[in-house]
Amino acid sequence: MTVPEILVLGSVNRDLIVHAPRLPLPGETLRGQRFGSCLGGKGANQAVAVARLGGKVALAARVGLRENGAAMVEQLKAEGVDTRAIAQPVDEVPGVALIVVGAEDAENQIVTVAGSNGTLPLAQVEALELAGLRWLIAQQELPLESVARAFERARAAGVKTLLNAAPYRPGCETLLPLVDLLVVNALEAQALVTTLGGGVAGPEALAQALHDKGPAAVLVSLGAEGLCWVDAQGVRRVPARIVKAVDTVGAGDTLVGSLVTALAEGQSVDDALTFAQAAAAIAVSRPGVQDAMPHRAEVEQLLK
Ligand code: ADP
Image 1 (cartoon, rainbow, N blue to C red):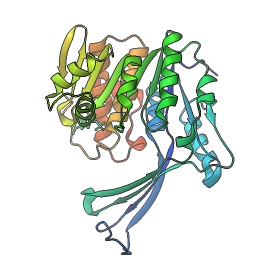
Image 2 (image 1 turned 30 degrees about the vertical axis):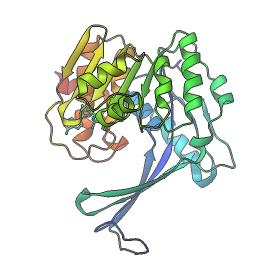
Image 3 (image 1 turned 180 degrees about the horizontal axis):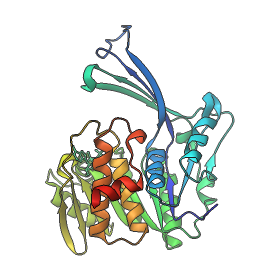
Image 4 (image 1 turned 120 degrees about the vertical axis):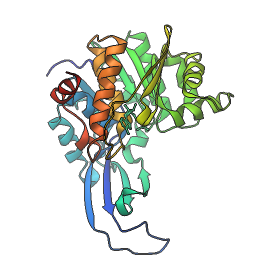
């Protein structure tokens, strides 16, 4: 097995999705039209995004073996993700997201249960193998103290850290001094800045305010409007690729995975941002989350 260059520390969920004519009222039973389940969780999504694009990636996670958790780990392996750092406690239930999609995808209702994601212990973080890594990336569906410790260790080992501060959680601002690259969408950026005592602002000002708190670079993603990037060289705006958006769920995960893949290869910031916008545009033009994530050749074709 090759040595990973990118380690994702993050969540693994099973998404259970039913399509219904509308959302049910409290106590109501509706007849739905379709059911499907798929692998999700921001950690798993970002690891799969990297693997599809040819990055050497490992996932550190905790997947309980009850409710057929082993199948989730097997699926990650089949995607080319190194799963050796996934703890698999026999008596725990894996994370789950129960999703009801209303008519024509216009509305949805989601309940998530962290399951074994919520118990990832510091001891597992202390045991992580960091030799040979270029990047450690994490999101906020695991205990924040585990993320903080992993980032401290990465910093000490000369490994760059990327925090995707999603979903927003109170207290996550304490991670900022440990972050090399912060990736947030506009809502998460505003929530962070508000917590830090700032006011309502546009994306450039939000990115700048977050850059002042420690990260060497900050990316604020802006959906169909692309992104805003701030680093020591200043601010850049990169427009999104114009595509017909079919399903934008998980766009941010494709953006993070593709960006870190390009940066780990040594691409310049400009090239890496262009690559990431192309990958994310392909993902939003197709239904599903992991199902929609592009393979390397598709992104290269679009960039020709
Ligand atoms: P999140 O999913 O985290 O909320 P965004 O909605 O900001 O993230 O989207 C992340 C990236 O996905 C954007 O920077 C852009 O590259 C791409 N994207 C999202 N929506 C569209 C769209 N409608 N058209 C083209 N690209 C899009």
